Image (tube, rainbow, N blue to C red):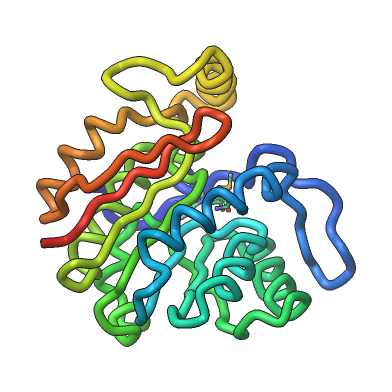
Amino acid sequence: MSGAPTSSHTAQFRPGVQDSTPDGRLFSPVFLRNAPPLIAALARLIGDDTGPVLEIGAGTGQHAAAFALAFPRLDWWPSDPDPVHRRSIAAWAAELGAPPRPAFAIDAAADWAGRPDIGALGPLTAVLAANVTHIAPFAVTEGIVAGAGRALRPGGRLLLYGPFRVGGAFQGDGNRAFDAGLRADDPAWGLREIDEIDALARAAGLQPEARQPMPANNLLGVWRRG
Ligand SMILES: C[S@@+](CC[C@H](N)C(=O)[O-])C[C@H]1O[C@@H](n2cnc3c(N)ncnc32)[C@H](O)[C@@H]1O
């Protein structure tokens, strides 16, 4: 894992955030496709849990507001390194009536688990990053996993959602083309190999629990702290 945050660790929101509203709400074109199956999967995994959940790279904040409303037993804490995204996260929470929890400014490649404000949340029930690992340098994936290993409570879960490579293979031609496009934009980006994330997780004290296939050739990877 690398050390201090740098601007090269902070990617623009992709793909395709559209217009924003005067209060700063941004719109992800894939939110409606992703959110229902993700909420159903999360309900099975953490829907009966309590305690704090940290979302890394919350982007527009549409997911964060929807999750906070779907899982009222959990305290959903969003984060994003981009101030424009943090404004959107707050605006979506206000618009939808989700609990107003200001988004943390977290660069996941840095030592976020060692921050006093994150420590003050207490041991985390879960850490979620949706559609982040492929649109940022690998140091961000390393940082998410290492931080989760430190910040999760025993039995707590790391949840990574998005497109991944599995055993070296892309899940569909669309993912192969997506990977090529990402790498053309930035050679440090690209779909991550989930076996490599398993290795990072084990080194951080997290055991692989599930690789749940999701619509559109996405996966929900689940790792659990022992
Ligand atoms: C494609 S967006 C996904 C947003 C949201 N999770 C979703 O699924 O709609 C990727 C997000 O990762 C965030 N990001 C980029 N670099 C990051 C970093 N170093 N640490 C944490 N988040 C980062 C971006 O700011 C952006 O909000």
